[in-house]
Length: 444
Image (cartoon, rainbow, N blue to C red):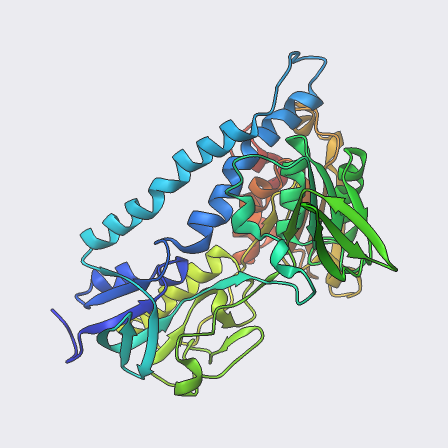
């Protein structure tokens, strides 16, 4: 039963992970709706992390076979079309499955474009709904370079739907998306050129590790152009080219604009309501409220210290649900949220970054060449390094790893960082042996 005189107690604009708090409210008797203009589940589920991992699966298999070529022989032929078909088989049903799950939980899923008319009224393609509380969870969309010919470039969503892989691809950018897609396309046989905005790839990660990834991809045939200064995309007689540098030109078959993602703030009525936002997203207080108190924001659309990652969106959304229900009145805290780039090898990190710790005498950084560990030698890992960051009490406060299992290694260490475990507490935990968790914990 509704707890207000509106059509809904809480409406989420956007049905991605920024709306993950909806079931918590529905279970407590709140009348809840999600409004989605595209596919339920949002970018991550349909055109992001999930889809990317399916395409990356054969890459990891091929890399393992490559490292163990003297043990595992044979030809692992890469089939892009078959892999893309399989990606659709795995990913396409997810949106419908999630929608059914929400409906069974008592949540209304409304399809259409939502526009705020006043603090409690939402227009959905001509239909009006009212709500006591509103949560804006509209996420981000791919940036589009403001240069001549920008319409000739494609975005990450297009790449994840390519039926046939072009022979040559130019990728503009060198962040997560650029480096992950360069890894995948290169392994599947495409000739890849990466046009970097500056001279650093994966700039959010510890640079010696990032440069090791660049060096490895370079050996595999990927061309990196640093400080490319891309100025235009051109098409002549059906042939594409990227203009860059001092009058230089790179012919190509396909262009990927991977120059970042920007907040979805246009067309939702934010300006008309005076909701404040900037180029980083909607401005919120420490309860994730906008300057209109009954309207909240969650996920990538927010301008907060949280990284724009799926776990951040989920955490924020569930916090809002607990705040609305009265379960908490405390400001949102700042948990340790790990991040990873799915290159091969991967780079993952959590807590205090290495670059910050190196220049601060409050921390000690311990570097390890993991290729010498017997557990990493099982699958012949030849590019694996780790950096552990300890505070003055020798508590683990940060970790960065570059390896084929970096994501799993960082997940294993999260409890020690998040709970600020003492050395004695760490020693009381005995992980399964042999396992990646045992190997990373024994270094603490």
